[in-house]
Length: 297
Image (cartoon, rainbow, N blue to C red):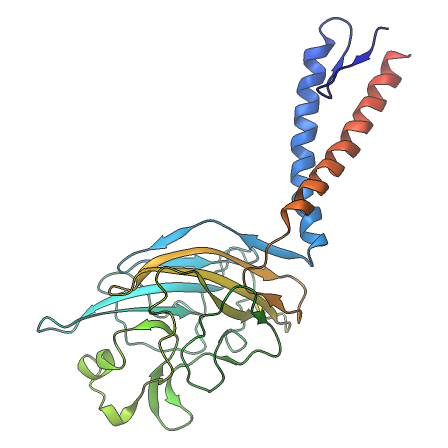
């Protein structure tokens, strides 16, 4: 048999075996690339991320499913409400359940702290008591707009305030707003509450005035009520402060429960490349071994 190795890392074999071999190699190297993704995730402390840019417009939303189990973990929800007399308010909030929607005409008032997103293919809902966002440090604060690299984990200050009984005082608060033109107006105009029945955060909102710079929302979650807490980040870019629109530029989480993650962390490209070549070389080597054994029979 005449077997020679070319400089392009393909192998020439007698007759029409060459084209067949090249096709097999392409398939095996494609599998190797898929394996490299898994290997890189393990090498990088099991960080799983999604870098798809997802814009949100007026009354739009972006669903975040960190672990790809078909149950939404969080939703970035834009709402525009016409209060009459030319008073239109826009706000952008983070939701942990499916009680308040984003579609035009939906009732923006309901609050259900124990509501969940649809289970879809899962058997247990996420634990909405554990679900929370990072805050500067005082209960009832608006969510923090974190810079890249900020550590998100057990030592972070956490909260989720969308309740009708804030601090057990019977006050309605909607502190889960990244941008908040509402600041209680909707609950007063449409819900009939008095100013004394509403609590409004005083620390922000924190996603205004960033001039298009990406900032990160730190989150924690208990997938399918497992009793374990995972930490993650959602990258957000505000393109228009006035109408609270922009895009989710990516999100990621640490698969090891209890382990902190830095905002914006993704697997290192060098690790992905190294793992890809390693996996491809391993599979390719096995293929060549089988070919040699077959031709020498």
